[in-house]
Length: 329
Ligand code: NDP
Image 1 (tube, helix red, strand yellow):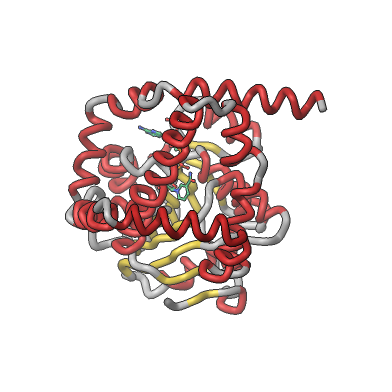
Image 2: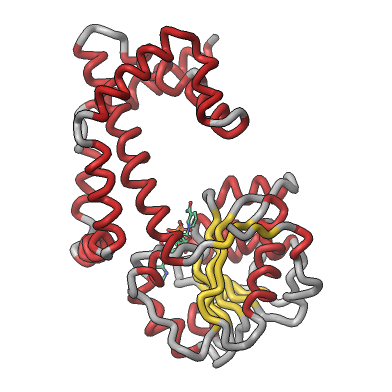
């Protein structure tokens, strides 16, 4: 993968560009604050009339309607929820952008599955951070930066890379390194890991909790063991700092033997085949279709999620008790 760092930052790339940050949610606010603090001179926020707009005004941003913010901008950074963009883009964004402007997506989702088509007159860029807005902002303030996948999907102006790297620099992504990845690959990767690794971790926590409680273990002890003590975080830190293979050796023979033996048993359950099926469904756009239908129906599955596991309330109680005990201690 091509890697971009501070040495690839173009000089004054955004000095004369008007940047519209569309959406002031999790990522929108962090991006706008970072751009402001990086000294980007012509910054405007586009948002509907809601609490996020109030927040943007309170932060001292120049706030306009989405269409007004987009009109006359050189770069429109689209920070609306992925599944919302297909409705908003053709009405509030696309028609108001002038030819030769750049649209920047923060994930590959809309481009990969053909949900939003910006047409042939715009630069199409992707700057997809690998973390959420709050951490991204915190790391910018600490001058640490964050990783992102970037790509130029269409360059009609000849300035697409300069604009993209200028933007990546201003929001802080070049400080920690950007990697080139196509929108298609970013979307497949993001969804694949969320729906395999993410799903398995969530499933394991809920089921270990349920089985542990049913067998008489105190809920607080289970929460402490699984994540409240912070021990599990050291496992992931070990993957990052020492390496996945090496870090496995620091947990002692009991944990190694037990973990390895059970992992081998899980291999026999068809989990790896299920991962293959999931990748194929994502790549074929089936997941995106399902998710857009979920939005159109008013998110019935997401609303039901809280009732998915009867133990979620027990888990929340155990966490609250632990927090109280710790603050009293
Ligand atoms: P949020 O849900 O936090 O914020 C979205 C913004 O869009 C809010 O201002 C929201 O206002 C507005 N919005 C929602 N619906 C509409 C609508 N129908 N019309 C107009 N405005 C609307 O989104 P995120 O910041 O989480 O995500 C933005 C992008 O960043 C996505 O592409 C996502 O994939 C990407 N991303 C997000 C990361 C994260 O951790 N959050 C990490 C990396 C990338 P309101 O709700 O009041 O309508």
